[in-house]
Image 1 (tube, rainbow, N blue to C red):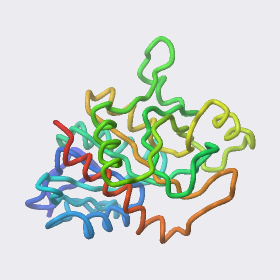
Image 2: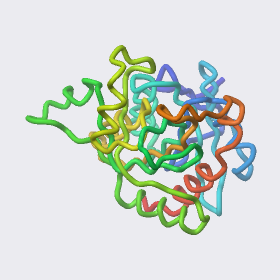
Image 3: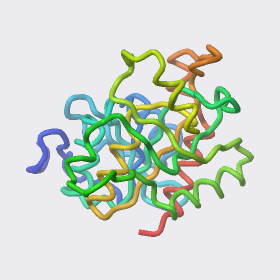
Amino acid sequence: MGKASPSACIELKDGTHVAKVVLMPGDPLRAKYVAEHYLENPVLFNDVRNMLGYTGTYEGREVSVMGSGMGMPSFTLYAYELFTFFGVEAIIRIGSAGGIGDDVRVRDLIVAMSASTNSSMATAYALPGILAPTASYEMLREAVKAADELGVKTRVGTVYTSDFFYHPDPEVNKKAKALGHLAVEMEAAGLYLTAMAAGKKALALFQISDHVFTGESLPAAEIRESFHEMMEVALKTAARTEL
């Protein structure tokens, strides 16, 4: 029996806790893979709705990894609760994205400095004007440094966070590309808005799984169990983030 939880979606198992910094892939099976292949002594802390979460250590630093589901509503539900109810100070989104930039290739690592979005989520914060979802600079700097050390090809820039996996406007990705976006995905803006509102830190990393315009793509199993470069950059960033 787990401890009483203020959340309907995260219930800590007895004797477990969440680390101050959490990596969040969309797929809970990727969270399991990261825990089993990269963390020392990983312990399952949550399995409500099969949204697996583990806490272990990496390079001597306690780190958690937990799935989020797909899209901003699912991601921000978990991010808000981790920040608000479980004492988390920083979240790193690790996921796949579709490349749209001309010089973006399959397997490239994207570090999202900021995220444009077609979601109306930012309007809930009632800032006169347009609220710009933006990463933590400290975490971004550490991620770029880690990528350089590992020799990982990295692009830093803006991504386009869409509420649609299948957008009804066939021209939307061309418009995003023309405005300099590197990739399209479904979570980064929600993470950044949630972290900004909570006064916490956040960063989104993406490895390109397919390219919208060239047709290059990787199979689902390879996406889940490869992308080692992104995972290692994320873990080194987590280990070095000052909280």
